[in-house]
Image (cartoon, rainbow, N blue to C red; front, side, top):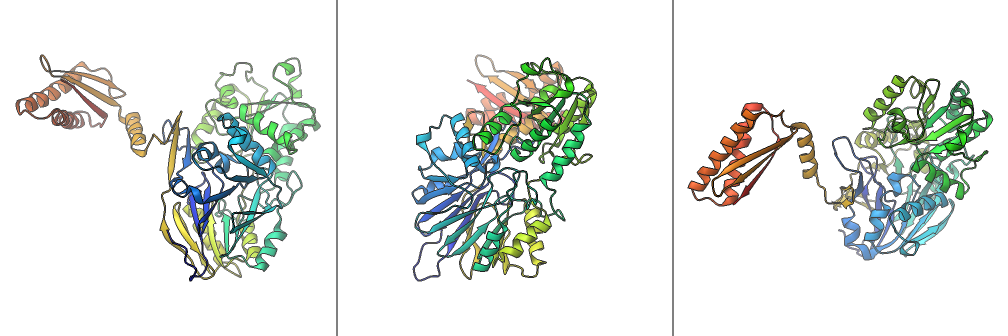
Length: 552
């Protein structure tokens, strides 16, 4: 790490620990001299090859090594990829002020309470979206509103002795947001006039031309679809799409349908959003029991399952596993969402099952009933033109998104002087004249599997993949009184007595040779392993996970 030196130009270090070169587990540290400020602490969801993993959180080795320097934390909004890691991360670091808007902190409190973390164990400080406050001696923060797919979404201006950083947070420039609260472009423009040293901006949709559709357009399309549904309606979207769910509640009221919320996360978001004034139900929610006597055209369910999650309400309905509700012909299912990359297969499985049941299914792109919460190229260009940054750091995207964002910036009338394509763990040194990577710190993924946090590594995941593809073969050799070998396999081949006998013979020969040569037990075990692996590969062409055991 660069050490402070009063003879040098003041510099700020920007250290992305997650969310750079990827979408998910966002967390960024800023360091100026002996003080650190942290932004967000999100999680990511596993890919299909990360078998058995529940969640992925960022490594925080750097923060733990410099824990005494951390002076405060700010949160941009309440999505899981920005706050989902907090229950795992906050208990491992000193108690410092954590700033966020009302809905964001409401969701954080819910999440922390689920983990048994008490209010007095954290220091959550609620601020509005034009708040100005200081963290430590060197960091001055000013929030500003940005429209996104969740209310109370903030960008921020960070003023330090080294210069001014403007971070958009996640955003799209929705001109007709459901709550009527527009992005504060005037504040971004003023910051640009005052001088922005570095712009950090959302790159998620940097490959998409034009503008991202407004939630107002999605609401019109949803109302058209719902108006043509004759029976019960089951609608799924992201539980965090508070503004869209508000629009759906209004549509249901106009269409004389009563709403039932189904699914734990859907209920949680709705309760928190209502508590802080971001959701109002025109009619009280009903329970499933209360709609039993109502006509089908009077009912609308809002449920979880937009990503095909196996235990979600929609998946249980599709596969007939719901305890109280069964789908039937005449029902309509509306998926107001797109699959997150990696979830396409699970979503398609649910959709196919819904078709088999005989319900009517509505989903993008055939129906324009979902819009991204992230801005497309015109919106990204608007931010760059208003902020007029000297330096530019594309963020919140995979490398292709970052690079396309950088290319877009170079086409504008006033392109940044320099753009960096950074990775998690890069230490980016920023001063009036410098913008470069000067080193790296530990960064990467920590896997959450059941109650285990960090006890699963890539080697274990590789074993899981291998076992799923090739199976497992366990050989237990007993040396006394007479050497013999037992073979147990799972997922390898069908029961095959001849093959088992051949494997036993190969293993036994290796053991007897090792015993004659008076080798150590460890070496005898390795000889057995090598001989069996070569034999199995030659005879079957397969590479099962082999576990050799020796009992003396």
